[in-house]
Length: 248
Image 1 (cartoon, rainbow, N blue to C red):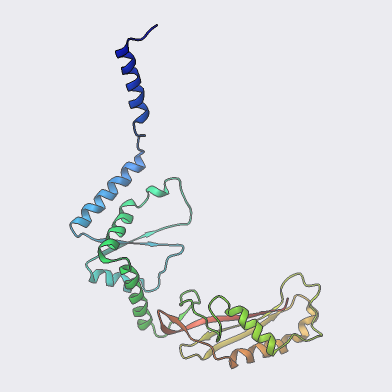
Image 2: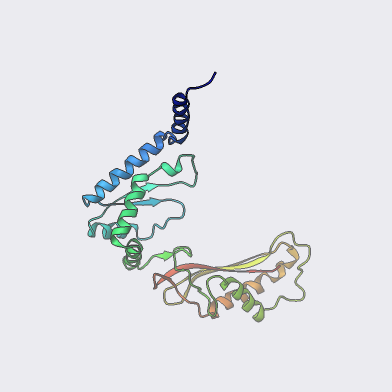
């Protein structure tokens, strides 16, 4: 059957229109776009709300101080708890909150929120002078002289073994796991050592004869070292620290 020219053109046009039509949006996409528009409207009327995404990988130190600083800038806040479990619709979640955060960052400056968090941390340290902070909460700077954050553990072991070589009688062979001597202590903001504890563990039990010697050596090493106090945003703080010497 031969198509009439007009009918043929109509058929081709219909196919072209159908093939070029945009894919239908899912309910998740429509809801996400609505949330973004709502956030943009709130922002237009200076109804600012900064969302704190709490959970894995987020920093909580000075959180209450941070919220107060936001309030001083007429920015409300809310917290959304996140998890490390991903979902197929993850990119459509919290669209409004993410959009508002972007808009606030654009208005107040790229580093505005970071600067408030830094101030909040300093305020927290000031308000908690007796707090002992974990290693992870502190700035990433070395606590050991003549080393950096990444190589401080290696530098400690190198200096320790230079001063206290492993005795020839120590049995290294036939060990299924690591043997070690470890020290845990509080490094004060003035560089002093508090609450020092030492322990040794030997996989080869014949090496237990060195326990007292190795414990004393590490104790002397720790007490004789001029440790560098931990800091949070450049402010000295009391912190937990540990040193482990491996015999492998």
